[in-house]
Length: 611
Image (tube, rainbow, N blue to C red; front, top):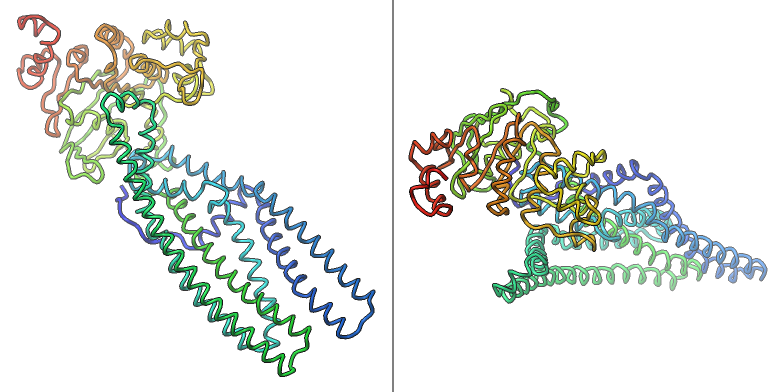
């Protein structure tokens, strides 16, 4: 998998990112390209009209032309400028309607990437930082994903104006052109260095913001309100939040100091180039080489020429900053995947097919960690087998499930499905072999029935009720006014209900049954249930998993007795293996743990082994 590292280089250049935006526009709404070009042409036309209006009228006065001719010229320029300006304002006020779909398409691709990328990528801190930066670059009307079109329009406008004014000024003296160009290019190089500061420090900014927003969200999380009050950690939360706020403020203060220095440098260079141009034109006028109308034309053109050059440099600098943001978006979208998805071998789940999963000589450690979880582990899950996985905290029980499900690939060794390495398959289709209830599960804002069916468009109401009946939750839900249409998650729906922890786990069990996959995974499925409810679930579980392979993880060893085989993980290996009776006769770690737990359920030591 891609290694996490600090990156201070821009992966995609301005040309590449500009072409990226053009391709996005062509695919979503090509009108945005036409309107951007039209916006630039209108701006140049207005500038030319404003440039020539006063010198033209002044020239007519010098030539003592008729009043009607002058009034006609004034009306022509006035109506022309008004018409062009009105059309330009109309386009500018309606540009968002053509640009917004392009930005929304990019955002949709980002969220699709975040929701469909492989599990190791989604857990990677490097990807989290990349996603945070990409999100910042895509939100708001001033985001790079939308405001880039304004920059394109201004850049085209400035470039066309530059060419026209260059043609005019070369008729006066090339010295003005040379001095102005040198000063403008120098200013661009200086500002270019300053403007790159934010991108070079983007990882530092992302880390500070991530910490700040994490503690901010925790401080206002309703689910933590009881702990904050009972354990008195409110002051600590405020202190940590204030500390991270100060760090964020210090970062922005450093950035603003750099921006201020860049602005001061730009002002000094602008003063120098404008001063030279104006002094030279005044000298030519005093020498009689220019008429009053020509002086006014070239004087205005010199000022405009400087503005065009400055505009080009500023647009290029702004485009460069925006392309840095676009590069963040594209780096996130193109983040390297360790798994094959659509490129992998097709895998179809068919009823009646037997599936054998084998971990062969597997060694695994989590990315960025030096601790080895498994070392040369060998394990086979046979078709229709009920396998229990037990062990102390940190022994690797959940990690084993992640390897079986294909959420992670081993560092060494193989995970085989019917003798074929799962790396060859389309990983999303491999996931369809499994139904699971993990320790951390998700209740989504929607109806209870939708949560069971995982928002399948072809929801089977009878099947939902059957699954809820099997897990003992049908009566509770059907007693609600809206039944299976009752909403969950109060943050979204005012009429939502809050289920208890045990009810939520039963709901997840119903979701598992509804998917009806050939392999079932239960990672501590009864942790929030009381002893009676737990016993009821265990009795039903044997029937619910009939004909399916299943992996059952539990700290309560009494719950593993119905399984065909029990493995105990220790020191990165399978330390003990067998049925409950076989492991009790073995008299090692499993037997000792069972006896310790049994003390909490019986009154006398004589009954331990019969519990």
